[in-house]
Image: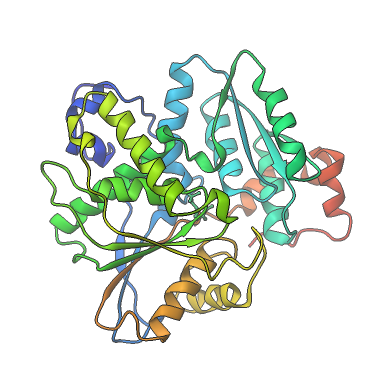
Length: 367
Ligand SMILES: Cc1ncc(COP(=O)(O)O)c(C=O)c1O
């Protein structure tokens, strides 16, 4: 990193310029992402805004880009040539790591476990394979530790935590929180009262909480963060989120930024009612939210953003958000994957255990 920072750099480095010299970072995305007001989805008594992190990249967008800017830089600094990561067979994190990891010159090994199958999951698999990721499918969760251990043994491997939610990856969302504070300071967005987002591996929420606690040059935002849980409770909850926020703050403090030693985080509420009993399982509420959002021009999906939006819509319908300004963090990739998938050789390049998911029917051309 150079010793000066510009508009294209992470908000973290504008707020804490000394960190730019010591925190490894690789530009991958397009930041800052827009904030925009959206009408027609909630009653007029609720003021809804969207943070467009779906537009965070030109090749692939969504919430993983910010995390990977720090994760890939860290792996490169450590001399790694191979990234090893983990996710469901339809994981957005695995795909984002594959796309940006391969583009940055890494080999990418992804251990993938089963999840409910649909065309979106099939498209993710074809895209993983088209960019040259090597997939290591397991029969279920039980096979994960052994398969991960085998891949991580390689001398040139760097482990990228599931969902990108290590303290290093979480720095990406500390920066997103600071970016929001900058947008508030520039009056691009009035101060929200509540912020909704999907809660998976918790890095997005943990980073936002840390960033929204402010900086010497940026007043804090005390909005309530509502994390809508979409994975099993033991790995996704308020305690895990706060702990990850604390570990991330400790990492930044360890880089010499004393500010992060004594942070008071904004309030966090975890919403458990929209999970639907299994990761990746579609729920009627999420499917309806995806449809209603599409009607006003927002492209969501049923595993993460659909469930988060379902919670927001339910709270709005119950009158709980009346008179409030609500921000929804759009964490799903907005780039069409069809051209990328067409570049690949299709399902034949996948390991047999994954290839059989395509035998029953072909993927419809693009979405
Ligand atoms: C579209 C989308 N939204 C939200 C999340 C959740 O983010 P996190 O894992 O940081 O909690 C993910 C994670 O994979 C995702 O793919």
